[in-house]
Image 1 (tube, rainbow, N blue to C red):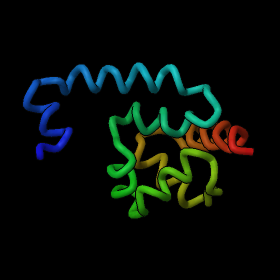
Image 2: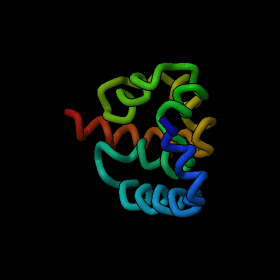
Image 3: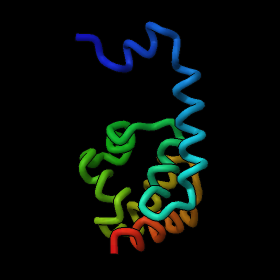
Image 4: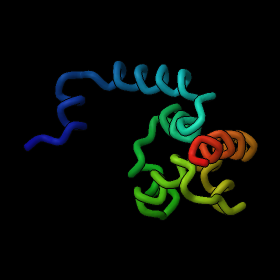
Length: 102
């Protein structure tokens, strides 16, 4: 069975998918529980892509995005590097997401 990514390529939908991800990210950037995910989407990454860059499991990324996992200084820095944003943007997103899970 064809992978979803293969079908996207086959039908030439890469640009449309990229645009939709960015639009979704912009809509979610100030929404508690969605802010870190918005940064990831804006970077054009799936959870597994970000997990690979961080050398953690996709489940860990999901927990970080949902605010269910605390962030060390190291993970904040690593997220900022992987997402191409500042540490303060990661902290702001994490604070929003953590407040949503409380």
